[in-house]
Length: 164
Image 1: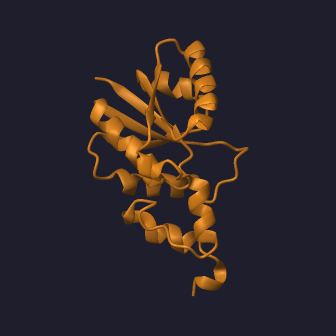
Image 2: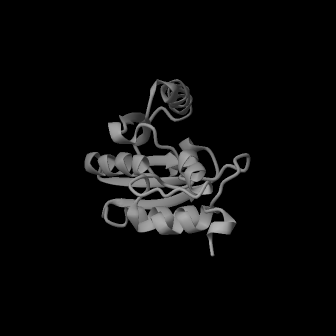
């Protein structure tokens, strides 16, 4: 069984993330969406909220599970006996960082391969940061995040004066 790990902060999950996860689920027997714990990164959603939102977003994909981990990715990959790390690429600017990480991961765990999937053209500009910025100014994110969690994201991140 080929197990792939798709790591990220998913703060929150976007249609770009979901595109990569969905396509990975067609390539591998099982995909683990791994919500990373990074104490140095300030997130808008708690770990528990990110896990729950992501679970809702991938519920329709039977071979996808969601987990969280706070250590080295390669340690998690080894522990779960995964063969592949899936990373999404939006633009060349993503590639340089992702390439460095792939080389470091390969050095620490030679048994794990990194596979890069490019996001669909309509999602190339999407990021969790953009979603948070749009909502913080009172905008709506239809079509940018999975519809099953859109309202939760908008309610949670909308400006206080717009919440009532």
